[in-house]
Image 1 (tube, one colour):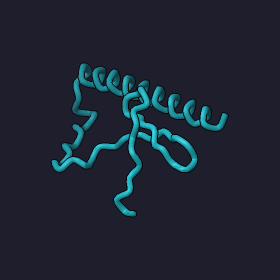
Image 2 (cartoon, rainbow, N blue to C red):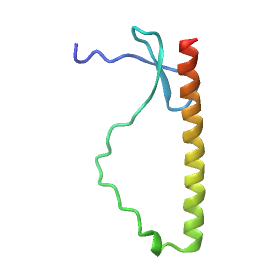
Image 3 (cartoon, rainbow, N blue to C red):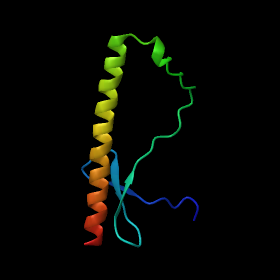
Length: 83
């Protein structure tokens, strides 16, 4: 039963899928397979220009916002399962 992976059903939220199991449907975050290429190292923050720092902060702010939304959705779906 090694290759018995649960089927993923779309839940209407990007990156989240419902998994059917014994305890009812559960939410799970899909993961991509590992990249085959080596990752590039980030440049030293001291070498960035002010504009690059601002852009990085904006990207980080957006990523953090998406992460909070994902966390909130996951928490709500788990609470709905308990109710």
